[in-house]
Image (cartoon, rainbow, N blue to C red; front, side):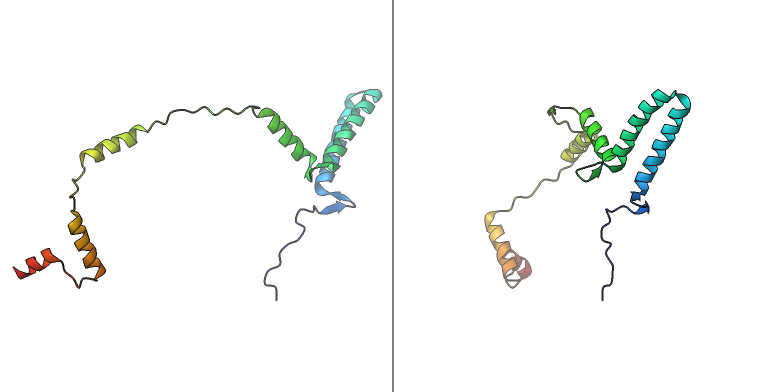
Amino acid sequence: MDKFRVPQFIDVESRILGPLTTRQFVIFLVGALFGFICYKLSDFTLFLLEGIIILVFVVLFAFVKVNTAPFHVFLLNYIKTMKSPKVRVWKKEPYTTPAKYEEKQKMSIGSTVPVKRVSSSRLSELSLIIDTGGAYEGENELEKNEK
């Protein structure tokens, strides 16, 4: 009766060669390429030293996870954190309105319509008209209708 199937375990990477995932396989290929370049460009003792360093980095990037995140994600976050400022200071600046807004305000102030003030007795009369649903027409309205 299920209409839609919800995928489960989406954070699990697919395996391609035995226990290796695609990401780990690509990391090993890049490490082997660096190892081959070091073999061709240096003598054997330097190659062994470089090979050990490359192997450590390959294993580190391929298998180590920090807080369930791959090591390269952790390393990028660490670098980003070290580059950001240590102390954050809020520099409060006075708020200034844009010039266009000020011009609009000046234009609207000059073209204002005077508001008629309504007395409290007129307000109570209007509220009575609204409350009665128009059955009570008001004293001023009755005088106008009689004329």
